[in-house]
Structure formats: C-alpha cells, structure tokens
Amino acid sequence: MSVADHYTYRVHWSAEDVSTSAPWPSCPLSPGSPGRLEAFIGIQCVAGGIVADMEASREVPTMAIADRRYSGKFQVRVPEEVHRRLAIRAAEQRVSFNAPASACLAGA
Image (cartoon, rainbow, N blue to C red; front, side, top):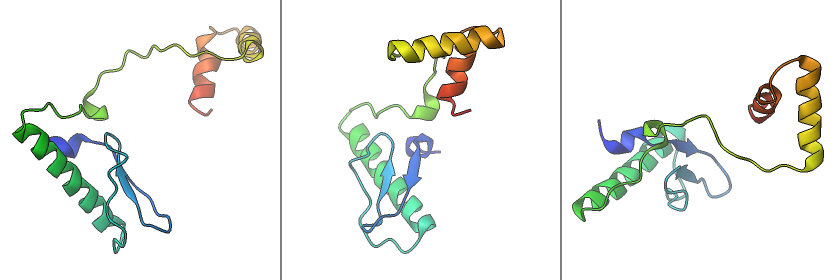
C-alpha cells in the first residue's frame, strides 16, 4: 500500500470538473475527466506522484489525516450569547456542557 492510499480525496464537479486531495487542495486534476471513478484514480495518481517526488528529494510527505491521532480536545471561541445558550441547554438536559456543544458541532 502506498502512502498516497492513506490520504483523503474528494471528487466533485463544477463547470471545470475538479478533484482535490486534502493535503494538496490547490492541486486539482485536469478538467475533462470522463467520470467519478476515473477522476478519483487520477487524483490518487497525482498525489502518488507528489509523494514520490517528496521522498526522492528526501522531504517528509504530509501526514495523512487517517494516520493522525486526535485527542478529542480543541478550543473554540464563540460569541457570549452562544456560550450562554449552550450552558442553558446543558443545564436543562442535566448533562455536561460538552454534550450539547459536541452535538452541535456534529450537526445533530
């Protein structure tokens, strides 16, 4: 398995038929891809080439999102009123402040 196989890829369409890779969003696949599968394979090949070039020049490739570890903790600043509403919701539900904040971030 290649290092490039671990990266996150998105294939999306616009007038230009653009595919992107999470570590290199400014490196689109050329327009005119015949279909989603071909575009996905194409962007994986582009990423594989980038990784190979980096390794050949003794650079360390960007770590793939799938290979990173996350603590589950991060700090975010919100307006005072949003903070208050989340605190009220937590109190009403008799849960920690983290529960409604996490649910909001998750889109629930």
